[in-house]
Image (cartoon, rainbow, N blue to C red; front, top):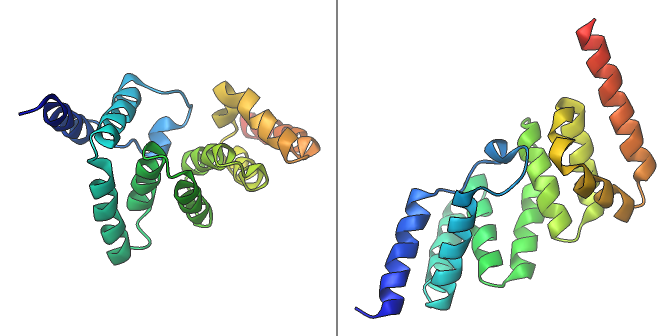
Length: 173
């Protein structure tokens, strides 16, 4: 076997052993070693020409299950790794249209919208997540503030923070 084949096999194993984390497990942000290993595996698969066939398989799965959040997230991740930013952004926007009761998932989606260049849509998701779980902003304040600033909604950010604090005080009484 050639070195690229061996590298691809190792990358496949890494992807199987490090499944994509759910949004709620990423709620405070930051990339773990597993996230980085997963990204490196996708880079290797892209360089060895294996990623496009994986994308095709996922696209076929998406045709059969168009509402599957897991497939949408994974395909978005694969598109990003394969340099297909426009397709990744389309999927992020499709995910943004879905309603969720999970504030951590909504926060993570807002972060993806920021990365996709859609600060205005991200602001709405941030506000919803902050109403339900204000501590999500904790380690990501700078990124959240930048998104609101980019969308010219800084006043909305401060109103959301004030509301979150007042709700917190009411709960503590």
